[in-house]
Image 1 (cartoon, rainbow, N blue to C red):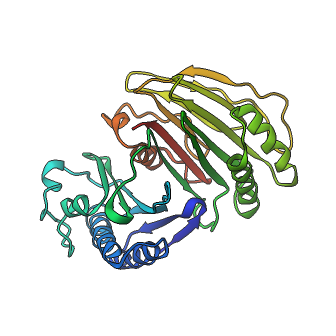
Image 2 (cartoon, rainbow, N blue to C red; image 1 turned 90 degrees about the horizontal axis):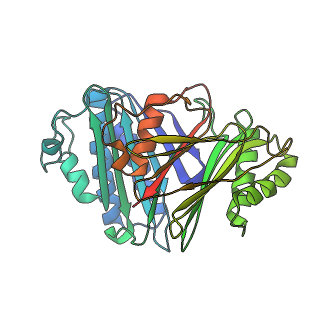
Image 3 (cartoon, helix red, strand yellow; image 1 turned 60 degrees about the vertical axis):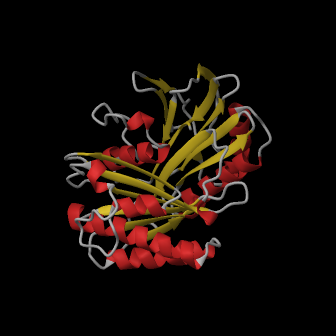
Length: 338
């Protein structure tokens, strides 16, 4: 089974054999213990992960599971994402009843996963597949106060051990900054550039996306270079401020409409003629999508009814599953009001 460890403690597993469920379970338990969860909490994660993986292998034959460490205000959580292109779930309410399991696993179905998780969401469309989100937090208590929810998938080109893309988030009392970065090419040199951009972003005290990009440009002169975009959502002012350089795409969407936000040509660390900030209105239903060029710019979620109201991790999962090019690293970030 192929597994990749990457930035933000996100690990990606490709599942296509019955033995993979046990391997994923062992990894999940080990990772839960590493981030300080109790044996009882690790055991709950083991049951849930086994059930989810078993469903993928039994019904979809192939899929992916992603594990991410999500620390927040002194608490530790594990986010589990599972996505497949299987037949979908014909009766979601029935599938979420405790005891309902058609995969022949040792758990008690997705209802048990929902019960064991601190947070659970599922999105399934007949004939298109299923995406499952389960979060597990120490003390089984999901932190309050996350007024902006974010979800991201960052996966290297298959065969690479590190991802040349990356993403980061920085919060303050009125909102949050989001960054997506794509180091030129792929592999370790691209990853070096992406990690340096993440460092500068996380250490910056500026509120201006353009100024932060200028700082990243200076820091990346010793690297291969990168494309990056930064968005700042100010919930108090109900605005989104955006600046980008290179091939990072951004869209401000609602269930009714979408608007692309332009990045300028150039390469951070090598060529930057102009960086312009754009300010757009942000409302309760707004969803921000940012992605590297590993995702097709022609993505269309019009057939994914109801997706815009779901957790951003599910939005990012559906975009990745249905529109990733599979010939490059890919990062997809989605953010919306909680």
